[in-house]
Image 1: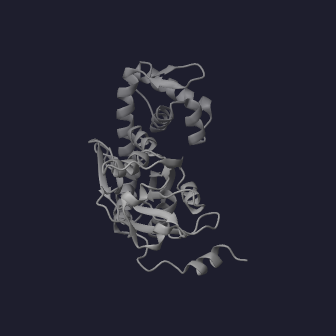
Image 2: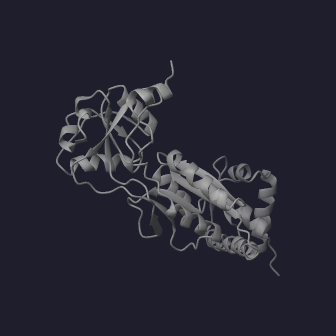
Image 3: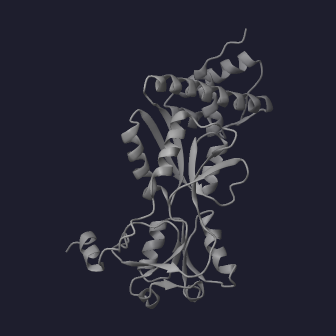
Length: 319
């Protein structure tokens, strides 16, 4: 009779998703020998090798290991769901949700969402990760994330997505002293005459360039960075303009320069932030509740006028 445990399956799945027993050990805070023994016991139970070991280069699945990996993930999901449903019957919602978020949006939205949700469901543990779109998609497909917050661009048909109440129309970012910043809005044609500071993260890079090239404009990229705050600081120093979707709630950069946020007059494709999970993976009860909560929260910055320039300068850069 075949004997194996859920713990062994958990160690096996972690090793698959981290491509390394050493990385799985660090993630689970379990010794490497314990994970190695668990996998060896599984291989004996299933009477087949699950991994090909590569010296100093981690592990990769065998064909049989790949089939067992998919079934192990489903078994662990059902086990977690059974535990959560049992707790829910007693009025408690618990469990762990692993969430990945696009790196430029993560600091603006995730702390607010997590804090609000935890006030309602304190027994749910949330693990947060941020990264670029391809990293989040890889994490979803490898089972690292239960849920990912990313932009609705090139997601494919294997992803179920649900829109969030967040800004989706690009806006222009300029130094507050720039001549174009003295008006309430600006055109892509006017911007294309200025040097551009590009948010160099996938898929933002191609999206922001495409909104110009599809209109026949070709702005010159003077500088680029994957960091939204670096982009904002470069603009604040007068090195060019940028186009962003994420709207921080302050006009001031890290280094004390003031920015102007201008609406763009041209029609452009939206860049919608969505919650996403694999279509063939039924979210756990805790994940579904988190999705419902996030859908109910308004993430657009308040519509009130921005604070007076001198007041904000004094608040952030006291003498």
